[in-house]
Image (cartoon, rainbow, N blue to C red; front, side, top):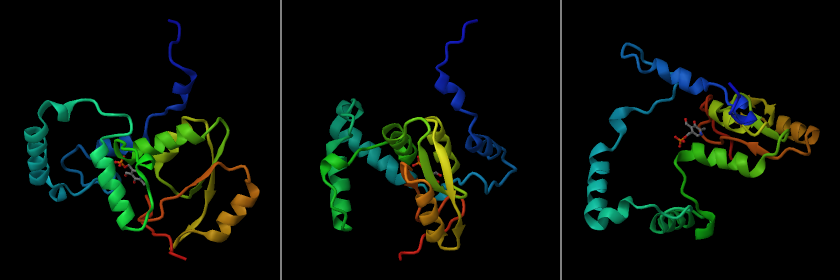
Length: 184
Ligand SMILES: Cc1ncc(COP(=O)(O)O)c(C=O)c1O
């Protein structure tokens, strides 16, 4: 049968993250590999109350499509929160996504052409690498120490790769090392 998939589909490999998470479905396994959240910390009661309140107050309108950028009252609340912690964001700079994984994918779509270089920590978050690979990116790794990405190594990589598109870094509680970049 004639192949119908786009060439891009060849770049989408089975996700190691999903393979790791499969193991966690087995009740006898306590997996530290998948980074699952402690279920007892989920605010089930509060979420239930919030859902009930929204459906009560806004009815069907709360289930309707919204604008691409997201629900304006939510974007406004986020903007105020950012402003309160000293980040001068305006409403046009705030976009609601389905988790940060979607934001990572959008970043790749916006910035990466085929063969572009992404500088990242070594090791780094697997699902970000997979998201950028779809855009045929190259990766240049920067060594880490206890304080995160090593600045001397980063400077060297930047000099070697002046055309690099961006640095993908997880400055706080890095995945998978858990390290936090020093403030300096
Ligand atoms: C560094 C990092 N970025 C993004 C994500 C994905 O987050 P979300 O569930 O918000 O899409 C994870 C999840 O483990 C992560 O560790």
